[in-house]
Image (cartoon, rainbow, N blue to C red; front, side, top):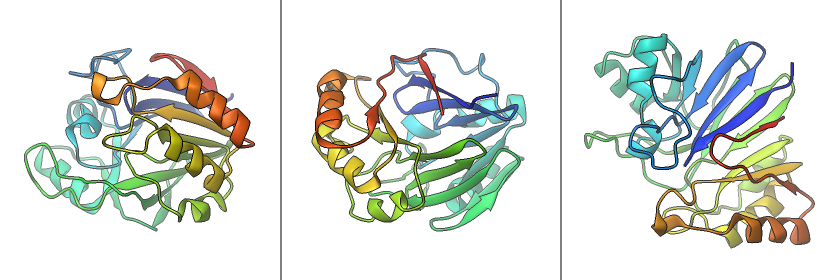
Length: 227
């Protein structure tokens, strides 16, 4: 069965692979672009990139309901335990671990990570997700950095990059990031949730086609593609 990636809106994704369902940054409650609700999703594992409320989102409630494994940096996992989440696995930047669904390696990201209650969320992370059908790089919230070239050297089939600007890379820097990573395909995220991060993804996709070798994939919230 092919690996299916569904954009749930903002920076939240659902990945169905080898009979497992993964959630990335499941911010659904209070998300004006959310295509589903926190009580409707299922999960075997949840990966959280950093501590901001629009990324931690509904992780605690979903994890308690589904008993999903939560993977994040050490500081976020420590905080999850204090919220009553029991099934957890801490990692940190540069470290990888092979879980039942695939291998997770946390990468650097240039951003913040304070948790919703003001607690220390440690360093923000990106996620290099190695699955049986290919490798996904979920950059999460980040500015452009040259070491994306090193991440690309691991062989990226799909890069998921923010394009919203203001808080993260904008469209132009996301094109530059694509050149560094050299993925087969690239998917935009973290845009159009609110007016402050409104972008024209069609214009960005044209730039990707004209300036890089990657294939742009533009989804609407709730839309899916295969790895």
